[in-house]
Length: 116
Image (cartoon, rainbow, N blue to C red; front, side):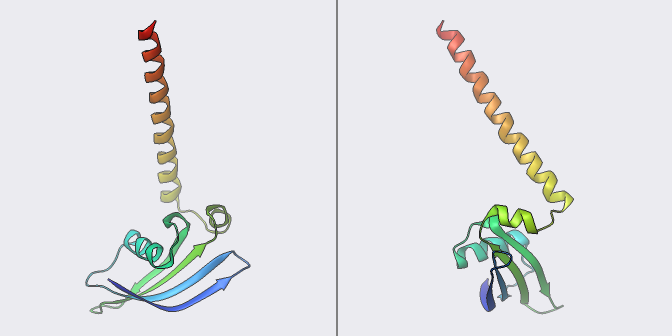
């Protein structure tokens, strides 16, 4: 995949960079692939990149990509609307992290009891 930047503008009102570019690829790229590619090209974290659109024409191997790179995760959360699917996945990830912490604490307590 080859990414060519068409425009790169700074938007100080929303604390973000607005990127437009062309992506040359054999198959239609997923949002995760595009997010990873943009994070590598612009040296930004993947969690502060919002992919707006991926447009391709039938039979063409060129895709128009429109994305926003925010200054911080907080700026992105204030401005971008979350889809129900995204909100549920974030909730699930938070629950998994919390469950892992609880399991570790239980293991620590059980080890302390074995020492006594």
